[in-house]
Amino acid sequence: MIPTPEVAAGTIRRGLAITVVALLGVLAVYLLAQGYTPIEARQGLAQKIFYVHAPSAWACLLAFSLTGVTGGLYLWLRDPRLDLFGESSAEVGLIFGVIVLTTGPIWGKPIWGTWWTWDARLTLTLFLFFLFVGYMALRSAIADPSERARFSAVVGIMGMILVPFVHLSVYFFRTLHPQPVLLKPSAPSMDPQMLRTLLVSIGVFTVLYFGFVTTRYGIALLREARGSADGD
Amino acid sequence: MTETLRLALELAAKDLRVELRSRTALVSAVVFAALVLVIFNFARDPASVSARTLAPSVLWVTFTFAAMLTFNRAFALEKENQAIDGLLLSPMPRGALFLGKYFANLGFVATVQAVTLPLFVLFFNVGLGRALPGILLVIVLATAGFVAVGTVFSAMAVRTRFADLMLPILLLPFLVPPIIGAVQVTTRLLAGRPLSEQISWLRFLGVYDIVFLTLCAMLFPAIFDE
Image (tube, rainbow over all chains, first blue to last red; front, side, top):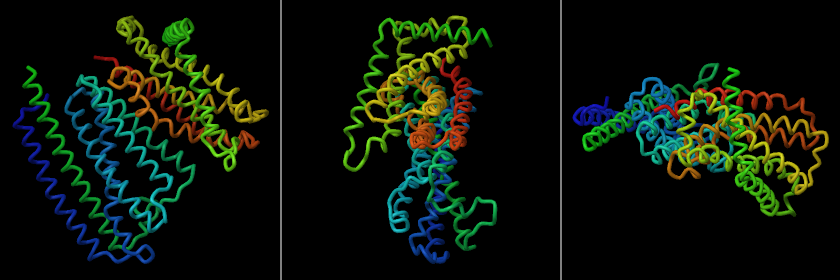
């Protein structure tokens, strides 16, 4: 079920092409954030980081959800490619997690007056991050590919189910994070120019995620194809 | 179903019997719990933080850390002399294997808790009094769920390198919801508030137990099929 090295190399090329397009998109988001969006009345320039922070959080969540979903599919279909995709997605998710966890405090310091606070969404992101660091650590500690795939699928699925529990428990605990401005029952409470830029940025980061994950998945395929060629 | 339960109890009884003959793991876990309590008492400034303020957190950190130490034992035991192969080859369904190990772990953790709780009362000078039934209830509710997760993760961890490090890394994020809930309820019960005020937390812990016990029972067989 593992394709030939040539096919894997094609996947890497496709991934790199998507990444280049997405990086041009990131440049466009930068220009939009600088020239198009108004300066937020109370937060000033610090608010601009939002166009990177929120879309990265979205990409991070998307990445970890897809790791959980492919884990479930793996246990059902037992296709090693699903496992390789889960691994790639988790790794890319960690990168976006690092972006979220660094841009957040940079914004938090001038606006909240503190780098870190135990708010519901911050804690959730941090624990998701730890969970997938654990996921990668587990993968590196198992030599047998089938065992590695099954174990990481179990952790991926359990992690996905854990998310609402951590969120609820910390939410009951106390919360300080700005309330959602986009996904909420009433209409988005944001300036239309800001909203448009945010939506563009979310789109761009989604493409960026797919660019990264396709490249990484191609590398995993190539490694696997070469490994099995050497092994046999 | 009753057959599965019978086999599970049989397996749990076997594990506990093995343990009672050597008592190494159990005694170590109890001593560990006692030491953690003592260290916590000195890891604070008595002038600014009273023992009572810290008490609920200390209790739950001790419970969970001591529990985590006992989890690896369940499958490390079977790994020696490849006893696990015998278990897997026996006509016992994987569900019974999970339940058996789960019950054994519950028995272990409950024993450690039964020793730790009086020590905690003694060292931290906390009067349980009327709060005792509520505390026992929250201990049961908070423990039932994370022991299930610990059983599944320890089955995986013993088959990796660095098993002793792998288990806490995987398990600790899953301890967050039960610990938060348990500490909140314990704090309020110790402050003399009635149990009826804590219904929403207790319900939360109950949902966690049901969801993760079900999920663990469903995912456990995937660890062993090859």
